[in-house]
Structures are given as structure tokens and as C-alpha cells.
Image (tube, rainbow, N blue to C red):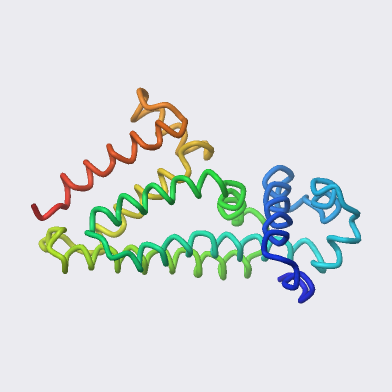
Length: 215
């Protein structure tokens, strides 16, 4: 993790450094990116970055921690909403899509973590990231059943996984090779842009409602 002095920086400065770090890790690979390359992307001296991180492993851990924070923020926002179930789902898909594109470098670092050789960090991050996501979608779907918006004759875990897969597909389809290929294959008429995102959100909402809506 970063040194204590890093957390004394304004949050905007922290975000700028970690965004540069995420982009560097994405472009050069987790095994090969260096603190010096992060400094070059920021146009600062390497000694400045070394003030905040002991080594590249600490840098990777900091980027992953911020990635979890960004996506957990969405879960918290949706959990606090006092809106009908399907309005919450639409908000979730919209925000996840926009943040997924905005923070794509962080997501790509997470997706490539298994090839980093950092077994302990990989497992700990996976447990935190996937554990929070699974719990959030379970609670989201359960609230939909309790509100009478979702069918009560379908397993909650099955529905939660479906909602989670749709969300992940939306947030990654414009940059992740696998999801990008699937999007072009399944939805060739929908462009890879902001308008296309909105159209696809509407399309997937219709699919989810057709499958699981109680009405």
C-alpha cells in the first residue's frame, strides 16, 4: 500500500497519481511497469513517486484498492436509493457503464492480475472485489423480490448472477477484447459509443424484465 505521506495529498492529487499508475500498468504489464514509468507519465521526477510507494507491488496494491473503492461507491449509491426496484437497476447499469469506461484502466489491471505472479495479492483482491459484488447483487435481487418487482419462484442466486453478468458486460464492452467481440456479435447494430451504451442499457433492461419481472 502507499506510504502514509500519500494519504496526506488532496484526493484529486491521489486520483491523478493512481490513474497514471493504472494506465502505466495496463500499457506495460504488471510484471514490467516501473515507478519510473509512472513518473514519466506524470511528468515528475521518479523520486517523487518513490516518496509515495516503496516498490511496484505497493503501487499495484494501491491501484487495486482504488478500483474497489470506485466500484463500491456505485453499490453504496444504489443501496441508499429510495426508488422503485427497476429504477435502481437502470441507475446501476447507467452508472456502472459510465464509470467502467472512465476507469477502464483500473478494471484492466484487475482483469490481468492473475498473470502478475502475485498470488497473495491476487487472491485477497479477488475475494474483496468479487465478494462485495456478489453480496451487493444478492441484496439487490432480494429487495426486488420483497418489493414484489421480481418473481419469487426463481432462485435468488441465479437472478443475482444474471444481473451481475449484464452489469459487467456493459461496463467492459467498449474496451475489453472478449466483451467487445461479444457486443459486436450479439448487437451489431449498436455502436460503441455513449448513445450505443444507452440503447444497450434499454435493451438489456427489457431482457431482464422479460425474464424476471413479477408483473
